[in-house]
Image (tube, rainbow, N blue to C red; front, side):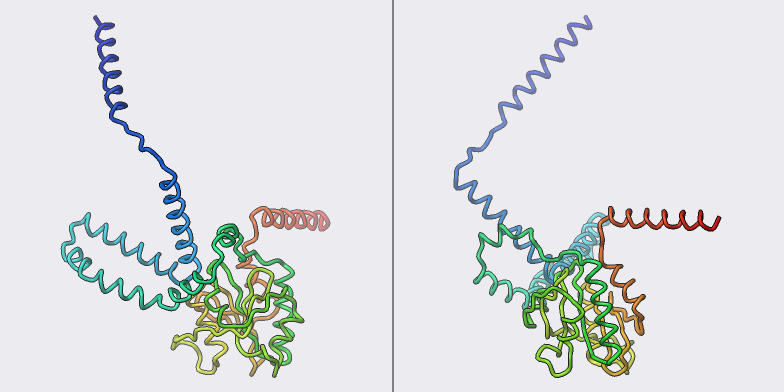
Length: 302
């Protein structure tokens, strides 16, 4: 009896699976469907890359936070908030276009002069390479030397967020970074000394770049335009800016909207190493090396 019941259930299950499979319909794919998918994928990918390399990335994260808040409001049945949201969508869309007007214009200009095949093949070769220890030492050496003779300098080091928007305002250099090159760029009365230098990876990509000035009223009144520009770029990007004062010769670092003043060579090197983002394997090797040295020292003391 039990076996018959089991056989009946299996037949019913097989019948249900047969009916379900019969209803399944695999769409017929044509060449134009494949082309359409490829085009949409290409466009979506480049839109995301464009968003990642501009201020729109931070704006997009803000929009995602707002959307999460709206979903929570819907789940909690906050009717007033749900009534406000659809009424401000049109205003928000207009504000989005106004805020990103420079980025949209530059994106359209780039669209007109871009080689799409080359850009698609090279899209993964972003130049945000991790800078080396040699680059750290060269920046520290140049900053200290310029501080001694009171040569003003503004060195912006790109981290995760792209600085191409500000790179376009300057003159292309694309030179391997060295203390001599930095000192020559910022030397008084030279063509490139006015403005900021942008460093990406181990290269100076641009000089005489214009940076946004900070509106932070908490900054000291004795700080000039160079320091306010360094703090300003650190407020809108995740870059680190090294500033050498022309008046006092002191070295400062701006990062995350905060300004740290009167750094010596050791402290400046520490700040640069913080954003170097070395691979975990290299960090482990250094840690292991440090432990080995510590153990050797302890044995010698014994």
